[in-house]
Length: 327
Ligand code: ADP
Ligand code: MG
Image 1 (spheres, rainbow, N blue to C red):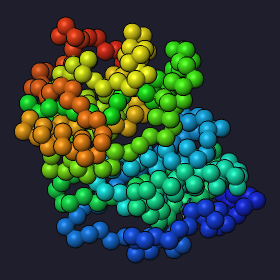
Image 2: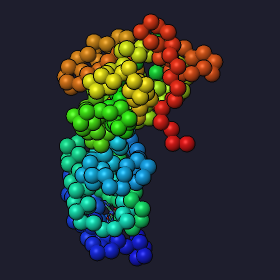
Image 3: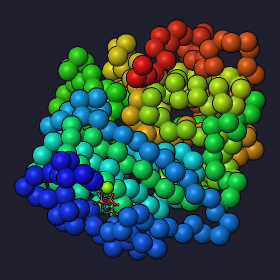
Image 4: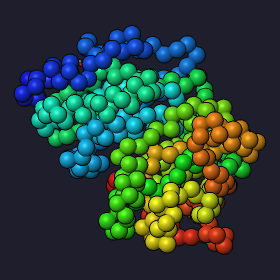
């Protein structure tokens, strides 16, 4: 780092030492050298992902720093989960407008707690002064050839989704929908403190044919699987698992929009052959995680929309926005 990039008050060095240096149990070399060293297990592949959180774009600058620390790592671990990978290591590149000890303590607490829960070592990063930006890279391992990719879906596959959808997006339109305080709090937790479905991703190795995490909305993300796999899909609206809050407001367009196109839930959508139904139901019981069959993969017809949603009468519904896209 250059000296003009130094964060005042607490020095850059002091910030790294105090808040981001922990013993790396599962790395050859962690924080403190020019680079970290890791060793993947023999017969396993390294899975690498990066996600950036930008103030004003992905969160408000005054957002709770402990929740931000959690979320910055969680969205990356969710990508590893969607690949069926076991998380091992992470790096953290942080631009901070000022060196605020209280903010840093809370941020690192949120980050480190989630890291510990999943046995992830923070092995490096970068710290500089600048507009608040949090960029995490996460690395995990998967047995060679066993990763859950977007391009593995086949015609006839079942389509499954974990947990419930719509909460996070509902939290964003909480005011418009006049949610109760309790509803707002519950939906807000799903938005601010997402749970990466790590154990599910690991359990789906050798079971699912394709997977993706729902970060842009069900229609958009299932659409990604369809595009990459060169297939289409049909989903039943009334089978999509809605949270209690979303269910209660389902007559409102904003709630249906949250269910179909709301992002940030970080549930997994995956496809699997029909012969896997029993195995998936067993996995659901073992993980105590709801897994719901919502539709099936179909043949692709021309350049039509890859995701068709049917209403309870079996009529295709117009789904409007595909999901949240930045550009
Ligand atoms: P360099 O000048 O070689 O890039 P730095 O001074 O930027 O080194 O970083 C020193 C050490 O601290 C490196 O091991 C780097 O990976 C680590 N590091 C810097 N910032 C962070 C951070 N926010 N979280 C974790 N490790 C960090
Ligand atoms: Mg550096």
